[in-house]
Image 1 (cartoon, rainbow, N blue to C red):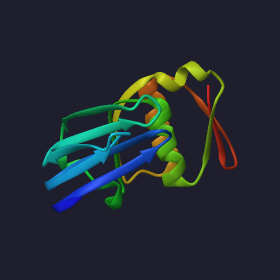
Image 2: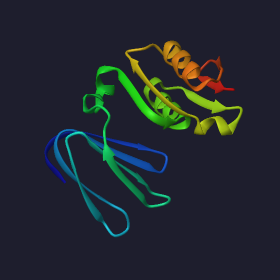
Image 3: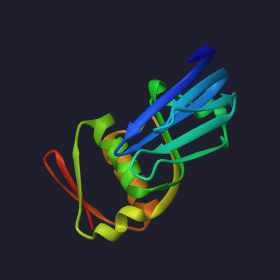
Length: 140
């Protein structure tokens, strides 16, 4: 339920994330419909597989919804989550040669970057390389 606020909802894989930039929201999740109130500067992550709910503070509420201005940011997030978002944002397909690389945690901000710049920054940050063939990028 929206209680007059500015917030962002992201769904990737089996996880849903809600982040609040201004105001308040109540998030109802899980089989029991547990209600979790969130205020400015707070976020909630819900894993639909494990049914785990984690609510905590945002490092910087100004990044909530920043993707609308061309700014993508992650703080200690798995590389797979980052590349899933890059796929949606840039309309590409991203694969992995080494599946273990998907769990590398990275922190980065991409401020209005081209696809090539974004890939370069993410690869350097994660300590991996990538190749590109048309619309398919392979991290190795």
